[in-house]
Length: 149
Image (cartoon, rainbow, N blue to C red; front, side):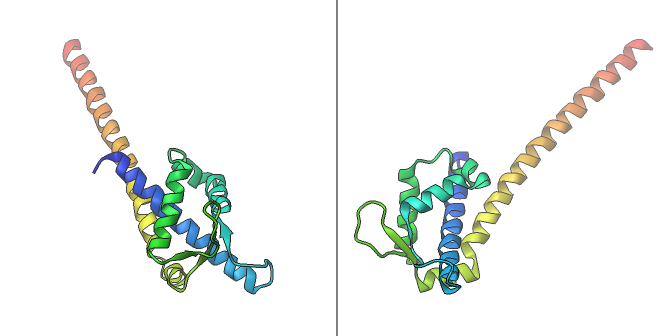
């Protein structure tokens, strides 16, 4: 699997998890009477995804078209539903299956695993460079010691 594929899946599942979280939060806020309505528009979702500090770094290489595609994938999976007939900036709501996915957190687990894999790759690359540097430094000191004798 190419590195770009790893980045794409990581961004995709992070977006999935965040979208499910945002819509579940709206349901809770509506029940607590903090907000009227439990829907969000696609523009609202994209704006929030782009403003989240850590998530925005991961989503930066991906266009709004790609984010819309991922939102559509959630709809095809039956986790969200478009409750308006608008072609652009549709209102989106969480389905019962989406709420169950929020409660069981499978998308969150996948996203966390992908983030951990990225961090493990970074850590292993650092370890390799440290090992190579150590070998070179040791070799230099061994050569200097041999030359000085």
